[in-house]
Length: 409
Image (cartoon, rainbow, N blue to C red; front, side, top):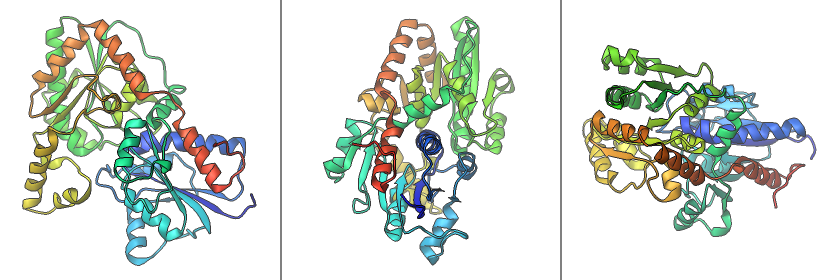
């Protein structure tokens, strides 16, 4: 390949997608480029608009740099509405757009605008079929979903779960867990403000009940996402009894690496979490997990598509959204990602309007049953599968762009 510029644009927005999908792909890309530099290849990160974003994704992307370009939602709106590329960016004549989270539309639109090839990694979502040459999916269940949505089978490829690669990449940097004999419960309230404000106080109460019932010392860790805002944390603490908040060991990453957070996950005998990528991380580590989806404030839950937009309308919007969430809540199937992979609930899952006692019941039962926890951990690891997804995706990118060192078949 000559030194003519070639753009590889990765699009991702949302805490889970950046930490669990983009991170391992970029890690693999940079590893290969260190071993064999490709003259002219420009790596560009773009965070398009996303209902699921925390608003703190750009610093996380910057920490995964250096990039030849780093752009956010405002840059996308400027391009779509005014046809204005970001300052200093002049597109190459050829390249590829890789979707790694957010809304499939924006990556498809950008690829069409640039006349680039486009590929996507999804949980089986397959939309804007005219744009995407290939849909990478984690397993056969997701592949069948993509085909049902209209993707030609020849354009759907099972590569494995990128979160397993993310966990493997961080394991080399994570410290070994301390074995001190204490039962350890990890609280994972999510990264979005509404999750922290409304769920974390309930998890504190559940942990206090566990302490009283178990009859032996319990370590409780609140493992805070680096995407979480300090204001939301302070509000959650203000809504919690002081003694419950003081009894919690706080774990928060200073940067965006994720190794400290993963080390804390590895120490947990039981984790309590909301749905999301964290369930996949815990599953890859084999940590028995209780997944909770409280619906006390369904109007605050972010949704994709038209209903998500309608929910933002003043007045009637939140009521429409709340009614929709309650109607579909009973039909969502397994909440956690490993359970969806397995087609059954591997660990306890709670959906609806429930109190901290219901969560504590499940946690105490697990902490008292070592054999059940061991079996659950093995099932979680099996459901998540082996690593290697990032390498397979980069193989396809290298081959599609005609770069040296491609190994895809």
